[in-house]
Length: 483
Image (tube, rainbow, N blue to C red; front, top):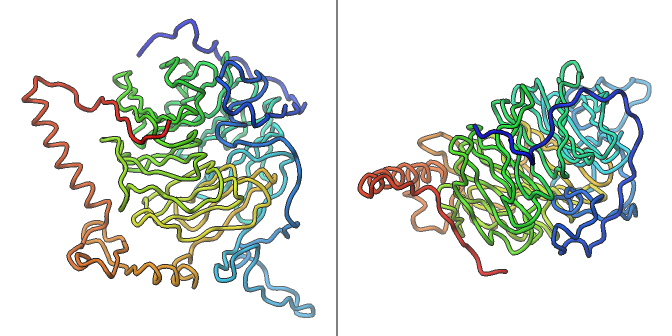
């Protein structure tokens, strides 16, 4: 591994003692968005304009939303016999036919920037500009723990290990902190010399990747020893907005205000793939599929795109599709379900969109937040969607019966879709009834594409052998025509 250069973060510090002070967040004007990074106010975190594109005008909009315990559908005690309560059919600011139950969790005093499922989907973790990190009970919506030794600055991002043993946070004080989730103990803190836009743990829990502002780079840290493994400066032309690991914990994707996507390989310490002009505006977030073959990116251009990370290409149909007409404003976040059957996104338009990945259409739009949706997550069992918002709340949506909702059924019929079962993975997938080849398609799009990737890999291996072992994985892909 590369040694730590002079520009790398300083050595881990001991936990700070019980700071409770709140740091007011300086406003970020819209005019700052198009300035070069060196002209931006030092006190304005990249998170505020890179991922969330948040205005600091605290004008509260919309009507008050009544807190509802959707999980009470299965766990609540019956009402007293002397005062029977009429059964409620559905809750929330939903479209008439959607009837998606939800729970509202209130407790943060400022923008909620990050949300995660953990502990087998029974607990929820959130971070906020109020300088707190909270652990919630998913059943009753109560706060289980407010973590001590918390930052004295806004929390910009949170990430949890797959086994829910640890989590890390990035905050506006230029520090990354790691906690033991069960005990609440602060394990270590690392101070960087620049603002941190995002931090993510690798699925195996061994590494932490941080997206850096002024350095326009990434820092990979050993999660056990808090020592620097790799520090890549000037990885992008402008400030980074988000980063994430693939499922093998060996590749790191990063996105930026420069509209580019880069894939960094931990083993070779090199950039494997660079996709320029990936979107027509700044890219706000990214996430890998569990297979690691595809990467989704969300953008201020109101779209999401799913990319083949082996070729750097996206397609106009099937799994690699430009997901358009789902949000009316900038898209701030995206998250794949574990089996990649659907994708969830949140945006400036205050909605959470649920997408059918195979067909690339929006199944449903969840409405109810009174301000921008800043982050989204999906439970491992695919029954719940979690959303964080500038309205200071976290919402837990029950989507277990989404395919039985009349609105979804009606929309599928309007598209001319019929459901079939994949002969390989046995998962359901949709085809168009009007497609003359629909009867011959017996595999879902991901199984078909996996076969294509296998064939492509064999061809690449043969080509590599015949050309003296040239590595054809590293390439520059320039897609699109927008500046």
